[in-house]
Length: 489
Image (tube, rainbow, N blue to C red):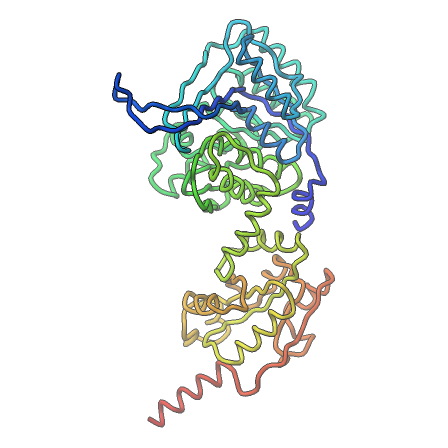
């Protein structure tokens, strides 16, 4: 995964992506409101500037170009002035336009947003949702069949404006399957059976609720809804965006994975879904698994909602945000998957990861000195902490003295430790295989060939370090001293 992150941020790989969907012209009028009209109780906007932006599937394409992808856009626009403006704006972003055709009987879809003091106060939509003509549909299908074999992946961006007809969707799925290409769909139809054959579907929670015969009240209901939709579409995964609650990823027969939002400030959620599917898709197309891709797209969405208007996010902005997130989540207890992602990010910037483990039932001076020396060996120190169940297996029914939550809280307050993760097994072998630290650390009360995990780390070129322990300090000795003093009193 380290190399995947390096490729992603150094832009060594430029996937070719086909985006098919509804093309929208976003128009913005910016200004300020200082008075109310005497003609009617409405605010008067004093216009300061105007600009055009790409919306709908065109915004997905724009996000992908910002990430360094080669993008081919497929859709249709009207034979009108707005269509001319939209096509020119697409050209200006270096997006390939051979797959864009002109409507004869429909205008270009546009959304005009009026913004005062960085707050949207009005939106004016112009659209015609009549079905596209058979002639337009044939042109789109011909282009799709021709181009998919040369792409690394396909995105369907459905804004329910008529481009993604049943025939076009079936063409995409058949051609992609034949060419062994992934298709990722951002849906709008309540009938998810239309998207049968997609690799991943990325609806928001409201769209999920309107498409399943399940009343969603909690995460268990959401999990059942996700499973229902996966069975319906035969997709490999569904990524559900939940606004301020982040997103959840569900893969066939697996536990629902929650990814909380980490946005610092939310100014405008316009286009956030486009950013999610763009970053998620690019990551999948360059080799990330679905969880890693979802984690990255969540970070990207956190960046873009801090901007006003239809905006895109760059690799540099995601990279900067991720480094800030590494600092923000330090000194906390992380689930293994989240920890693995953090570690991969750290290793992609050549940081050295040190790992140790233990019960840490009663923290004493020996622990502090040991952890200080362990941290000095590298850049990031990770502590694997035995759960209560694990400690009982190792130490007996009367242990631990402090439960896992208390022990984790104490460890997280120590400045030498960067991250903590819990494990149920009696040995950390499984954890070491997953984390793959650069240095595995134990006390020198062990012999080198007694260290659990030594063969694992040496097998991939890492090493074991034995740190001198402070004589007279151990949890057992501390407990014995406490009991002796208690008896004496």
